[in-house]
Image (cartoon, rainbow, N blue to C red; front, top):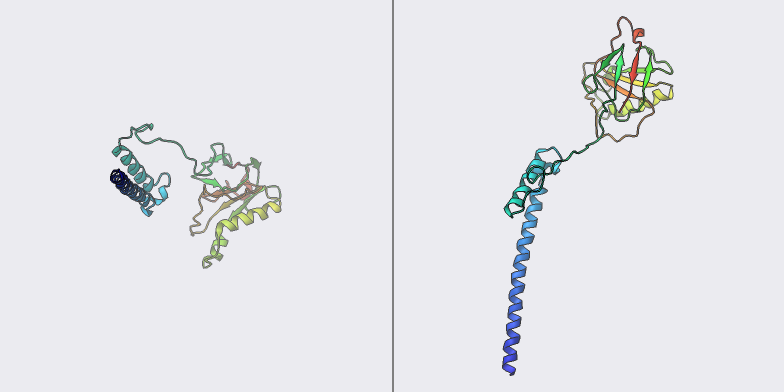
Length: 226
């Protein structure tokens, strides 16, 4: 009887050891697979899988191929893919408009409001060469760009933002920026700018506003921002 109990006990131990070895092997396979997936999806080639990037496309194809290989049925609106819209940041609203001498400028092409521009509508009769209280001010970047050509620390966006606030403090109702120099100011609408809004509209015009015969004939400017 003792011998039978011993044999039974040894059989149970050997069986449990066998199961443990199989479990360890299965765990290792699972761990190796997970590490391989993470290694691929975290690779620099995938560019952080940012929406719209080539890296996102690689990640999509990789994951959908894995789903297919293990027999998962596609349930997206495009195979394994589920399409949806992403708002990546600020944008220029359709209602934004800018008029000079009754000519409407096209947002994005002829001008853009800075992301920190106030959401206001203004109608006025300013002069380009005169910065008057209760009027929009026009600012040419030419001189400031010339002065800072050799200054690696000069931040043009910061300069515009700070001086727009100073213009408001002196009763300007808006600031219209333009550049007559040959230097590329590299200014563009930045949808990721999360700066606090200023109390007045700040607009960049890609060409100097041209009145009919003199600066004083810039009779009407209607500004609104995002």
